[in-house]
Length: 67
Image (cartoon, rainbow, N blue to C red; front, top):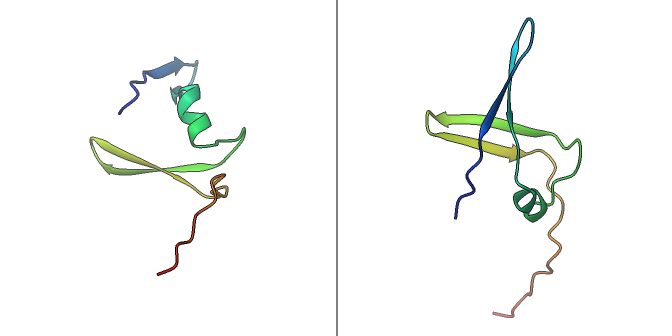
């Protein structure tokens, strides 16, 4: 399921800056924190990949099943 998001453009005197805001549900599901550093990678003209540098541990414990 996707989450539609608008790109915002801020026009300043000497520059322009684009903003992408994450909906609260997406940020909470990914456990983002204020000031966290992420990296954008352009895959092609229709795909942008967002990568986290430091991923927090999962809050859900993995169940180990014997083989």
